[in-house]
Length: 255
Image 1 (cartoon, rainbow, N blue to C red):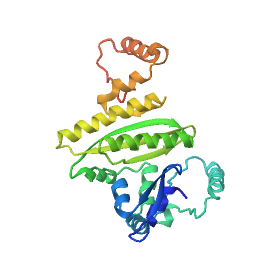
Image 2 (cartoon, helix red, strand yellow):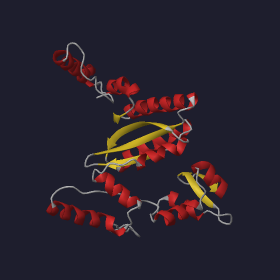
Image 3 (cartoon, rainbow, N blue to C red):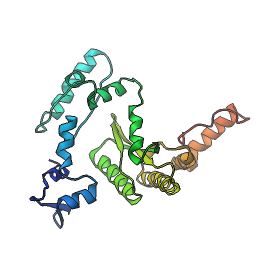
Image 4 (spheres, rainbow, N blue to C red):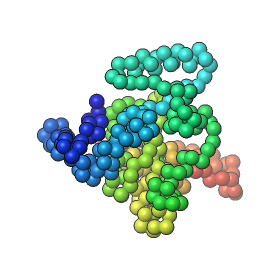
């Protein structure tokens, strides 16, 4: 069990001693403390799981390729997760058409839709958003470090962490959706500052960024500075040779 899983046990009658650093620093977790630290009262965890028919930890995946390849990988996947106590498997047909799994199945099959944009209302009706997507090795320590970096920076800037974590064969990237009130100048300033700091701290750890708002394109490009900016010098030479009048699209996201 991940220690965060135990937070759902906290009630008015049950206090949890929660480790912050090993066992040298403990905090008493009561319902008000849980809600203050994580924004969710402990009693809401099991309610959400029951209402949405999901677990505390949920992994959505899709397989692509010929049927023999899919069958082989599916056997390996099931074997890899078989040792996790309580792990359960569900396919799209095991859930209703309005389920979270059915929604993910539509997106992973390439079916477009506007449902995902409802998350913009998190900051109020008609909210705006910026996306920042750091990329790190597909390894547990890096994944945890990336999550902690994003979580801490979001807290500093008053942002809830809303993200997808996408795992590939050799890389892992998180799509951080920074949602803000478009009518608030301060919210927009804080959100852009947060995006800048995410790029800075990712680069300091040797992680690239593949998705940012256009305002950060030059910042992202500058992080790929190996060999005295060899990549930038090559791209500029190529651009000037192909498009000397500079009339073609300038590119996006620092690429």
